Length: 124
Image (cartoon, rainbow, N blue to C red; front, side, top):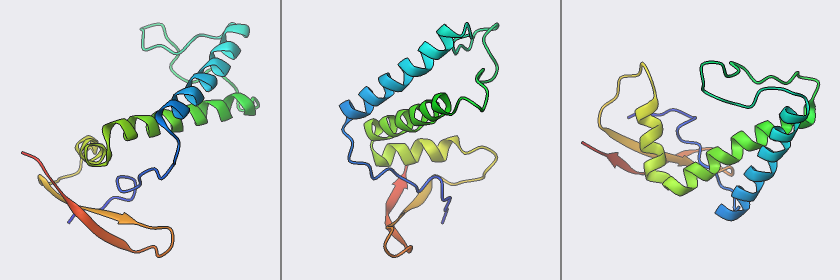
């Protein structure tokens, strides 16, 4: 049996894909506009791109938009992939952890804090 709290945390948001996408766009525009108006580099994986987020901690609105953007993009990705594939990809991306190809999946409700087996994930 394998259990990792981060892997077993799934979104319970009722936001639609379109609502999430609109929120992503709005927060991306806030960040992009701030970077542009302050002559800061845009995010890039290029050789000359910034290695870290180039905005100081004092800019709480920009950091709030960034964290909302990160959360919404993860939620959108997870919803589009659907729960079983989301868990499969999370498990496969765990590094330096030995695992077998069979996992029992768990869920917990906010009400009772207990874990319940909700299925098994098998792949070759």
